[in-house]
Image 1: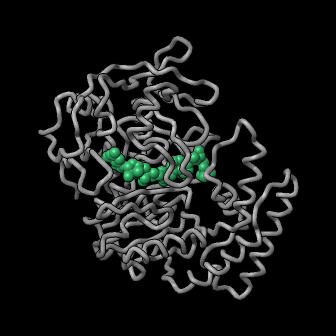
Image 2 (image 1 turned 45 degrees about the vertical axis):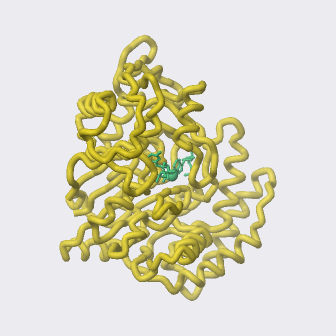
Image 3 (image 1 turned 120 degrees about the vertical axis):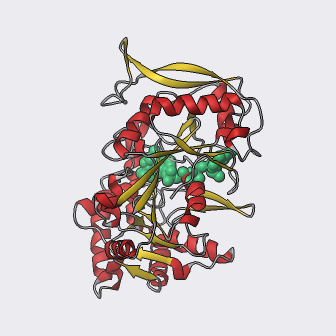
Length: 425
Ligand code: GDP
Ligand code: IMO
Ligand code: MG
């Protein structure tokens, strides 16, 4: 079966750390969507790694890692990631596979992303500017380039044609500073390096592995509230970040999906623009940002912080078919006297517990329940029974409301800083 691990909020829930831990129990880890807009952080022997395109199973020496066909790849960024891992002494190239059908992010896609965002002014999405939107746009418009195309004899002609179409579009916008030629030469050099890697059809690769009884973990990027169809549109990314994206992104049938493991922080964050009902624009939000080190792993931008939002989580649990929950960053709330959790929304005087059609125009006002803080250091705790009663109460009340149990609670960024409540697999 293909188990899935994905974010239930607006991204950065700690997917990288949990995939790295769980990967030890799997044969293959597969990224199925998104691209280098993702920044998945994990710590190994005290050293920090941030992965953008390479799956977070890469540090487990028995695990194969595949960048699936739903992913969009920037060759320059991928080569940089490869170099960083190689410099750190990680042996991984024989275990890394790239789906031929994954689409390529061109330098001119990034240029387009930049001019389009700049033109939006106040209404900008807050894109990571990695060229994600324009690349998926070209895929859907049926004139994108796939990484498998680099072996075609007319690849350069196809590249030039696509770039020319981008430049025509760019000319409609005010000019910005972008070193296109410099970026292109790095990109072409990277393409030549990537040609030596292992290219596969992700559908045959994954389905054959399933036939052989191998265990596969699909690693989500971004979060369910950033899904192109079900997120807070238009403040979303351009791919399907939810469970259904696994089928499209890897080429597997829905009945092959096993466990769906949803991750949430003990609170909530968002980076970039768009609605965020439980956002705290005050000292408490600032305190969470500081305690949680809430700055983007890809862009370094400060993340917006707020309380956990249960109607929002119920919604993403529903659309993903979540079977188990992971709570990360519980330790970040160690110093708070009290915590809040949104149980429902007030929309024009009505109490509702559903996410409204358009959170941009109907910004729901959260109705909170207050919980007593635990005021103790969780970072060294490894057993659920050793958690303070206040935290156990917070977890247990939330899981009853959500209707899905928490299997893992993370209490620090380190690989071993976990409390496992029930065994996976
Ligand atoms: P991802 O994109 O979902 O993989 O998450 P990011 O890597 O962007 O952001 C999560 C951040 O929280 C990273 O800096 C992690 O090292 C860190 N982190 C993960 N789990 C925990 C935890 O339980 N406690 C603390 N304090 N930090 C954590
Ligand atoms: P991981 O995998 C958090 C956000 C951006 C922006 C919107 C669109 O690390 O959780 P895009 O670059 O896709 O055009 O940006 O989505 N965003 C993320 N926020 N974590 C991510 O990835 C994100 N990837 C994109 O900030 O608001
Ligand atoms: Mg991240």
